[in-house]
Length: 195
Ligand code: 5GP
Image (cartoon, protein in one colour):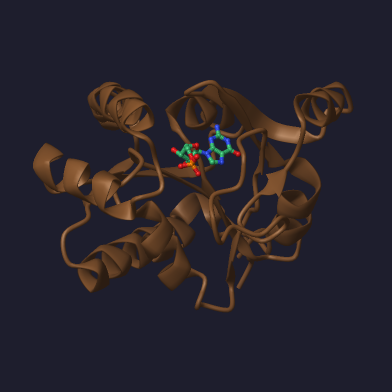
């Protein structure tokens, strides 16, 4: 078996519950989540280095110049990127690494690394999505409207993912994602051991 871990891209519209799913997934010792860099301002309770690396636009541009990102994209007026170094280290150590990123970032990763597996977390309905987005109480109406419009566009692109998991009851969604990861790791092409 190849010792390298799996690169797992998880996308889905804001409010689909990706964050909750990822929180559950990383309870497994072999699964790590990449901490992205962003130019957006921290929300209440968000810690630098834990939820994101919060950077200025200049710092973000410097990291692009230094080729420090696996991918980066602009989303609703802010930049987001997946730092390269930590993710590569984990993959080399055999850990499975989750990138919780939006659709443009996923497309870029797929081009660079066709071996990665992509999973789209689909909300059960637009009504549920809107309720979850509003329920957070952290965004202005303008931001909510922007994010809902973006969610509709993202859902259109879900068919380009390897897997779609509907986020109804959280335990079921987590179990489905773990099944995907486990099955992907058992693919014959990843088996290169002589017995
Ligand atoms: P939020 O501002 O709600 O934390 O994130 C907005 C969107 O950016 C979400 O869809 C999230 O998955 C995505 N995102 C977070 N980090 C990255 C990243 O490193 N790269 C890309 N392309 N998208 C990201």
